[in-house]
Length: 171
Image (cartoon, rainbow, N blue to C red; front, side):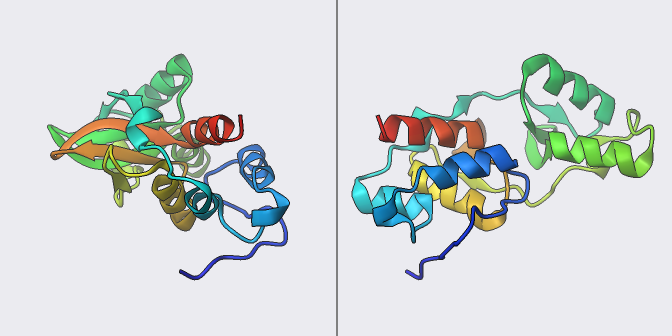
């Protein structure tokens, strides 16, 4: 596969600069030309997502408001929440989505999540490798992937989970 080459820490969309710098620093000089996911696969088999994901994450309904999502995020110390319409996953809302809605719309607290959520949700299986999940996140410049098993959301894998994989890998 074609490798991406970086000369500086990559800009990773919704991944904040500190997280990007930590992921970048995890690359040692022997593998500095490889993205972290490819480096891990090259060295040894990456653990499955299920070993690091947050199980049964908080969820919201598309009719819920930006204000309600913001309270959940602040109260739970989380940055990404899957959005449902009944039992169907229809999107994901991030802390960044909430912040941008508030900037763009002023008082967005009463705006429905249906209006601001990201519809193209990246999903992975719980048995997918953590390296594959990280690669998806890097390729799509997103901060999380929703973990789906048999059509049901069973977890969420975020940049924080990816950093735990990296931490365990280098111990």
